[in-house]
Picture 1 (cartoon, rainbow, N blue to C red):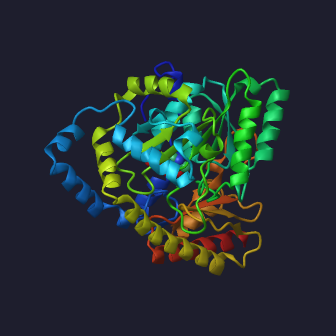
Picture 2: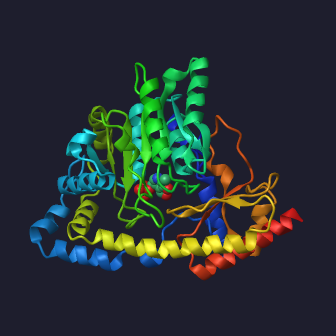
Picture 3: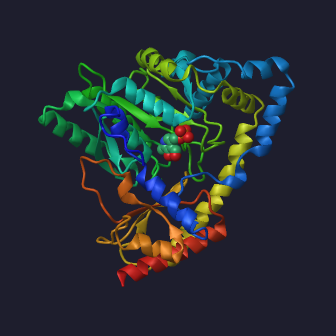
Amino acid sequence: MSNLTQNDLSRRACWAGEEPIANVLMAQTLANPNLVSLAAGFIDHETLPAETTRMAMDAIWSDPRRARAAQQYGTTVGHPPLRRLLLERMLQADGRTAAEMNVSIDQVVVTAGSNELLYLVGDTILDPGDIVLCGAPSYFVYLGTLANLGARAVGVDADDDGLVPEAVEDAIARLRGDGELERLKAIYVTSYYDNPTGATVPASRRSALVEIAKRHSGRGRIRVIEDTAYRELRYFGDDVPSVRSFDPEGDTVVTVGSFSKSFSPGVRVGWGVLPRDLVGPVLSQKGNIDFGSPNFSQYLMWTVLEMSLFDAHVRKVCAGYRSKLDTILDAADEHLGAIDGVRWVRPGGGLYVWLELPDGIDTGLSGPLFPRAVEEGVLYVPGEYCYPPEGRAVPKNMIRLSFGVPRSDEIRRGMESLARAIQKVIG
Ligand SMILES: Cc1ncc(COP(=O)(O)O)c(C=O)c1O
């Protein structure tokens, strides 16, 4: 570790902190190569689109103009043909026209992964001390992003159907009572197959969240930041129109998407559809940082979409993940079903199963279960890392399990190990 002091660093750099959980899990994996990791939120290595990417690259290289353009600087906002296709796909998935959504291509921004856009939007609308309401639990990297910006992530209840609108109302009433409502700038929601809970927010809650944000907006607008990173990874049930589709004025919802889960995280292409008034300010920030996100990756994704290679790939990865989800749920039924107080929800998509253990079992790094689980041969993410620091007590008995990376036999072995570790801790 360096010997920099706080005087050497900006306040933002200090707020960023380190990545304790990622480091610990990585160190454990390196030290115990036989561990089954049900922790890493990575995607399945075996189904990464090597062949699909080669076909798209061949098409780019066979057209010298396209090949050269792909290697030139692009624009800050992103490659227009890719943005056009992204917008068309969103409208098609939502069953709406551009007029119904009051949206145009100018509002579509491409970034290097969706995390960049989540950060940029935060950087654009949040001053230190400003508040974002987040589900308790929430995607933990986003909680780090908010901490990095000096913003306050305030937790509100999330249940098997995701963020609870009544809990959002209650939190807003509390902020109003404390004279802090003006500091509330956004509500963050992972609308499809949440990380970590796997929950998908039903349509009625989507419209309620937008209505609440609009109704409580005062001099400053309260935005709904909708994270759709897992939308394409649907294994059961119907797709639900985006939260953005419940904002026909288009002034409230920022919707953020990604090719990381559906195609390849290494390609680093994310995007968003922004309210019109945020486009300029977000692009000013973005231009100062990156001069445009990697043009090469954008050409690749444009070509993949244009050649109609994307949907076939998504169908393939979904079939693989669906079978892994079946495996982990069957293994949970078999090995955990008989343990009193253990509960989980069956997600319709995504990469995670959120497990509740009996009250009093501390799943954290310094609790009894984590080292036992490592001893038995399995790694998980302690649920406590997924809770915003304010707003709601942090339960200690939750676990996030990821089924994307391990093979089915490893998933079964990992679940058996986890069950043994839980039994030993219960005694
Ligand atoms: C809910 C959620 N949002 C956003 C991201 C960021 O993905 P990327 O920056 O690769 O697009 C992730 C990655 O795990 C995620 O789980």
